[in-house]
Length: 197
Image (cartoon, rainbow, N blue to C red; front, side):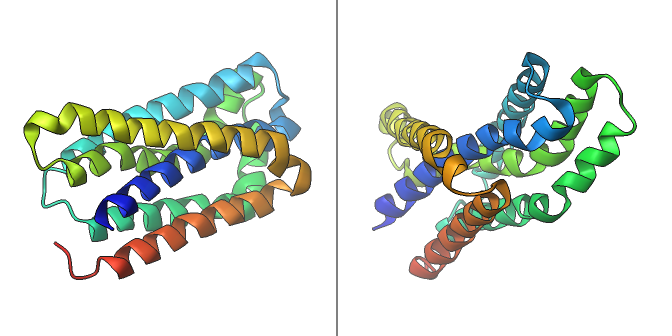
């Protein structure tokens, strides 16, 4: 059960990351267009956020890692993501009215909107590795397996979002759904493993 929970959470983290990244282009396009500048800004912000998340998550995992603490990452990511539903457009308008250059305008907007939740989502992969590694000699194999699971989630999130979700639902509905997924994962993981340290 423990291994299944960790792998499911790692898969979900990868799924949500890529879904948000793809939605980023649609979110920014009404104000900044969909040029290479916009996509360059989004990709840069996500790469920086994930790299910071990997570093922080790796260090955090050194201090008594547990599934309950792991679940907290999903809760915090959901809390940081949901405000985009209500305040994302206002934030973009604020940036758009003050930064004329679409390169720096889109970069600033992407930083303000996506940096916080993506840093937390980036913490998931290294933390999940620390939860499963009990034998140092197998750490490489376990890390490879978990990154496979996470990247598989990212691939499915990319296809599902770009091929179907954006055609069926509006962006706010999808973001609300992703927030719900993160919160449900947090609640289930914390409940199923409440007594574990």
